Amino acid sequence: MATCSMPKGGMAMGNACNHHLELHVYRVSDGRVVTNARVSITLRNNMAHRQFRVPIVTMMGMEGRRDVHYGNNLYAPPGPYTVLVNVNGVRATFSARLT
Image (cartoon, rainbow, N blue to C red; front, side):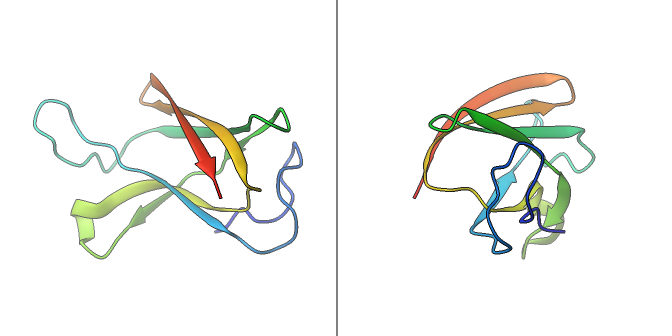
């Protein structure tokens, strides 16, 4: 399920996804992949001063369960972003520049 239609807040334009946002979650104690995390991701466009919540899909890459990750496909214009993440109640913030 891609999020490339116009979300509330108006960041998407058109129907073409141009980014794949993924978050890998590991246990601190042993480095194992967490396959059942409660994840939320909000993407904030720092130039347009708009943000939207990314609908989370649990995905698995070519390595199977060792490559479980959370995120979605989305449209986001180039520029600086802040990525706000909440995993099982633990918050983190990342900076990114999309080209």
